[in-house]
Amino acid sequence: MPAFLELGPRKNLRTGRSVWSAVKHAHLRANRLEKDLKADIVIIGAGISGAFMAHALSRISDDVVVLDRREPGLGSTHASTAMLQFEIDTPLTELAEQRSFSVSRRAWLRSWRATQDLIRLVRREKIACGLGRRDTLYLAGNEMGARGLEKEARARNRAGLDCEFLPGHQLRARYGIDRTGAILSSGAAAADPVALSRGLLRIAMRRGARLYSPVDVKQVMASAHGVVIDAGTHFIQARRLVFCMGYETVKGIPARGVKITSSWAAATAPHAAYPAWLDRTLIWEASKPYLYLRTTPDGRLIAGGEDAELDSPSYRADTLARKARRLKQKTEKLLPGLDIDWSHSWAGAFGESRDGLPIIGPVPDMPNCHAVMGFGGNGTIYAMIAAQMMPTFLRGKHPVDADLFAFR
Image 1: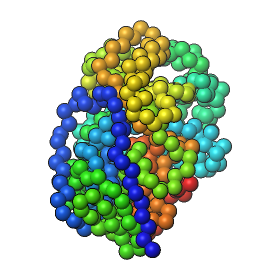
Image 2 (image 1 turned 90 degrees about the vertical axis):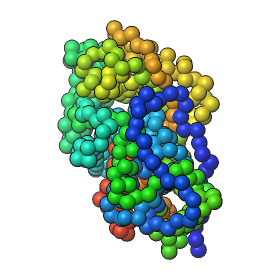
Image 3 (image 1 turned 30 degrees about the vertical axis):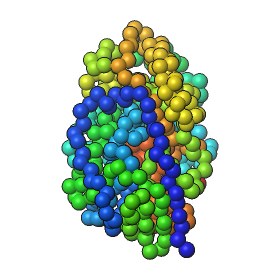
């Protein structure tokens, strides 16, 4: 018997004015869906996850179709601050308590390798997205103090991840930050997420992938013979389907322990005054809600965080000014001497999972359907991992580390 999934209505995923709205991105021409289609593989979603997926699957098939309700990259991707770090939201020591040290080690190492692979891919493909390598500074906070961070650093070193614990006096001397400790790591990066996603899609389209937008998929019927997609006025038949819908989750996909919340961010105008080392370093903290900081190639300072466990577009909009003030206060307290004036502030939906890991793999009871649910602060890295794994899944095999990210 065929199985059916109903896709939810279009969500208001972001509010305010994202910093990426100040960038003139190269136009990406999408097709209008004017007739029924047939395809080998259909990808639903043209944000960062769908873009990585299209780039990967267009290498193994010349008949890939990508669908999106919006223009490519204008959903949650446009709200992303694109801190490309291998560090998972759930500390290695905490994940080890949930799922064993062996599982925790594999997950963290896979994230580290994927981050390095992503950097190499962008450079190899010459995607102009402002990519730059960064160190990360993970600060002590209300969730984990100096002792916890020192234990975390030892666990990372034991797992094969190079990092250094900095006690409070060293942190103050090197960075002027008054916290009890921090973990310093290398191997991260930062980028423009809209430029990255459109760059990946452009390469996939040169290989023959077809992009259609706006297309509002209503329902999917899956069977052992393939998939039929109801796009309202037209139908699309495919051999395989990959859901890359970000925080517009699909009704009926059994994803326990995941939730949609809200997050806020703000950015200065270009050429802001801040310590020069920030251009080489991403900052985040072991706190709830946590603060994070990054810079851009044109000298903007971006701050984000203030997460709230509520998925409400009206709440995000109503609290935007207050959250921006709070980000200003926290940033100026962390880095004394700064006088911040935001030019952009915005908020967006944000997905979290209980263990900080994504869900990647076959959708239970939906033949020929796969899903990528890259919840957590590492969404772009998880998109890279999914793109690496999916060709093997589509060949009917289980890729390495499939058990780490399976539906649970």
